[in-house]
Amino acid sequence: MLSEWDPKRGRTGRPWRRLVATYCKPGTLCAGCGGEIIFGLRPRHPLGPSLDHIVALADGGHPTAPWNLQPMHLGCNVRKENTRRRQIAVERRKPRPETKLSAFRRR
Ligand SMILES: [Zn+2]
Image: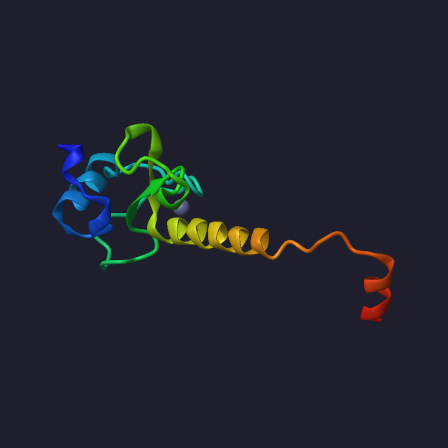
């Protein structure tokens, strides 16, 4: 049943929503902030349910394995994803060891 979801389709459609519903039940706590996940809010509300991939798919994380999934607020999930992207951007921009000359030139 869980293998129904095709990651290529993204986090939309019924199979994904069913997967979210399997992990996010009323009273479930967010893995990001520890707060309760709220149901019945408007769609895409930051306190609404979402399913987080502990290891992001982009980092080779498994799309549907239970050990890679955890319930999370949509807002916390977005924040986590943004942090991950920022870290990647920082990694790519890592400066080379600074020489005395380049430090001097910047002044
Ligand atoms: Zn949260």
